[in-house]
Image 1 (cartoon, rainbow, N blue to C red):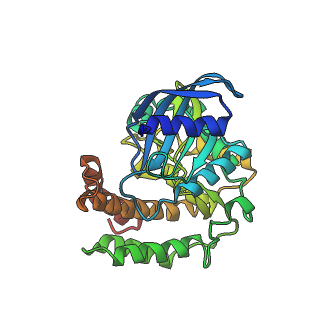
Image 2 (tube, rainbow, N blue to C red; image 1 turned 135 degrees about the vertical axis):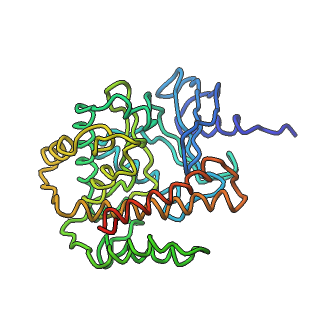
Length: 333
């Protein structure tokens, strides 16, 4: 019996899904940069079907280990599809596969987009006001997706409120840590005492930042990485984008690429929603607390032995600067 290799099984899956007569995979390479998911670049040649000829794709699957915040692949695919249908600039989602016999794990396939995503390179020649305006508009489009949605029924609505639910979740994460983190506990208590009331719930990307979008020159080509998305306060996404931990050393407060006002003005003009400047500092504290918890989980992936990685280990070293920034933002330092 002749054994069919992974590329042949994958080619057969693509042929069935696309209606092509035949599919040949010419490239199947691991892409660098995915911190939680595994992404592979596929170059395929299609014979027949609705789109014959060469096709550039990305296959996305789970890494060997994950963090609790990350959503399952089928949910990621559903949220990417919802964003695409809403008109958000994202890689077009094509096919989801929950059959592990194809490559050994569930996966989904989307079109590959061109451009650069590395944050340290993007901020290098800041300011990028035109790009910043486009990003503000894109976030406004994301926030047009609101509950209830039949295609997003797996997303739980906040019970007590977006801030309050997050505090409960992060406290549980910290309680499960083998080592104490008093600065983070202080940040949690401050967040608890100062939690704002949320008047509106939208689909928050929850990782909308420099490093999670692709640009080709000054042109935005796609918003990436939807594994953290969920219902929340729109200010959470706005503050996450502006948080100091995502400026890559730049002095520009909006994603390291422009002034806040450029981002705020573009978002408000597109959304028709007024940003409450008074609550943004609160959500920036939450951003640093959340990133600190994720950093702990990323480091734990390395320490578990399941996925030894210098990159994951180094993420754990970010904890001290995140704790320091929480103390600064809450008025301790």
